[in-house]
Structure formats: C-alpha cells, structure tokens
Image (cartoon, rainbow, N blue to C red; front, side, top):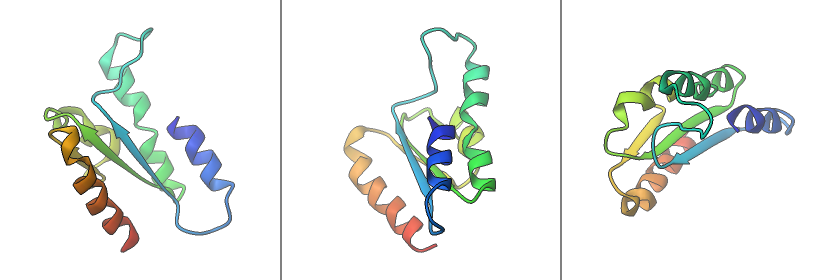
Length: 100
C-alpha cells in the first residue's frame, strides 16, 4: 500500500506530499509468518522519503517502539497508547507536517 500510495502522489503536480499511515500494531499478513520479513517489507516508507514523499506512522500499540522506528525511521512516527489518544496525536502530527 505504501508503494502504491507513493506512486500515486508522485503523479500529482509538484507540491507537498505526505502519507500518514495509521495502524493498530506490527505488520502482519495471513500468509506470511516471518515478522522480520513483514517489517522489512513495510520499510517502503524510507524509499518514499527519498522520492520526496513524507511518510509518517501513527501506531496504536504501547509496544511499538520495538519495530516502528525500523519501519519509519527516527522522528517519523508517533505511538498512541490507546485509540482515545488518536485525535490529539493526529492534530500534533498535522501541525508538524504543516510547518514544513
């Protein structure tokens, strides 16, 4: 999904481009059982940044630090302990993106 969204954004006229991925935890797939593979595959966020698309993750998972930094890179993610924190976290993330 990140690769597809990046291609779609690159087809748009020049301007600020950003993807905010909101997820409830570590990458998973019903037919892939190697967590390392799934994390590496989700690292599509890093090539997106090299192409000029800001990519940030918002994860609802108190244990996310173990994997989310590897996916999005330092300072490109936020962790919400519960879904109730999403509105505040999204607002802060929007403010950060708008300031760029």
